[in-house]
Image 1 (tube, each protein chain N blue to C red):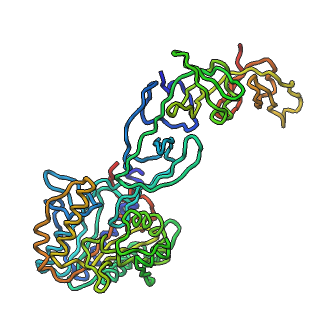
Image 2 (tube, rainbow over the protein chains, first blue to last red; image 1 turned 30 degrees about the vertical axis):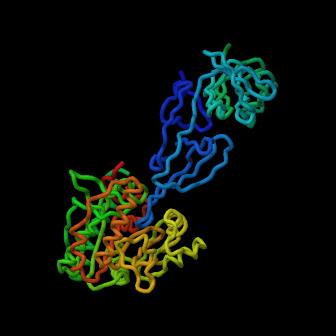
Image 3 (tube, one colour; image 1 turned 60 degrees about the horizontal axis):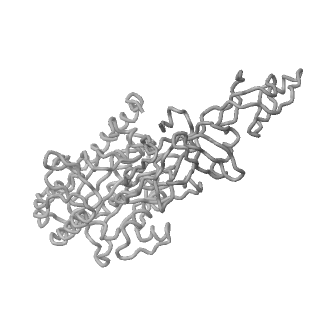
Length: 217
Length: 301
């Protein structure tokens, strides 16, 4: 059900979750030890989810092993560094990924629906960010929950969107002008080849916003 | 790195071994081999031995080499495989090679003189120069070495006036992250006179018993060697070993059998000093690599 890699979706962190696939409503209760630390590991400290972005093991002289890690808060984006002892333990982050569908934007929050339970969950604009440019109704997405809170939205790698506004390309100027701006049904603007017209559908790379190809509908 | 890619480093490794042996052989040090597997590794709170068939793999050749001192051997060296559980990093492999030497009738400062002569000889033979270039930094092993007390180092690098018995975790973190990376540039640094609470095997300094006759050698931020004036008083040594056992117990670590033969040999051991030099580290320095994996043919994953 929640096979992130099969669906080909990409979270912001682009890293496998917990090293395991998480089933909806199942959370891991494992404790990590300092010797488990590695880049990409997700922990929970003081109720906040962190991902390890840098890590070093040192052992000075006849002293204790020092496990140094730099971590980034998965919600606020703030990072800090800390030295851990070998006896330090910490909780695995309570992260669950669930397959859902994008429903709508209510002016303040984005609403996602679980297609099997019909439960609705809201995510605020800060979490969705620029991904709103590529989201359309009923799009399948992977939602990353930290406890009850949505902290990331994983879109499919590509999306097909309609061009709602685009001036015809000016011919004769192809030496310098191979792309022109076009407005999508989501309100976002992307660069497209000159032969693309208003009303047509194109496939977009959701990570970069780049035009991939025209799609016949 | 593939095995063929490692060939230049493994060749240099062999040359370093040859040069080190020649250095000690020329000074009438006896090359010895002590057990790789033993009943009772010396208890140290932060060094964990690898179990082996009801015994343990040696974490260092120290206990047996000191028994040789006690048996009347005055000068000896060994290139010994050592095993320390759980130590794996850019500069650590759980199995590594120690060059360890002992002198009867010497103190820890004599070891620094030995090390300077050793490094000079090895560098001249293997590199053709006494100047090592390591990760962009130059270190001339023939230049006058810097001697810095641990107290002065903590003051200078961390603004910390060390207590008689400093907090261990803070001491280790400060050493690993603030002090070590700044030692041994231009010329090697000898960091010496450690808090006695951190050196169970070293003789406390007369006059300042809270500091011990122990030193460490650094080149370009890399810890290379550790040596000390060896602790001789059997009761004080036994007490220090019991403290280490208690510390291991408190950390829920395995407590090894009591090293009875070692303690029993101490009354016969003359005043001596011994140094343990990480040979893989020396090879890393002479090959200019930050990764121990590149100077060992087969490392643990």
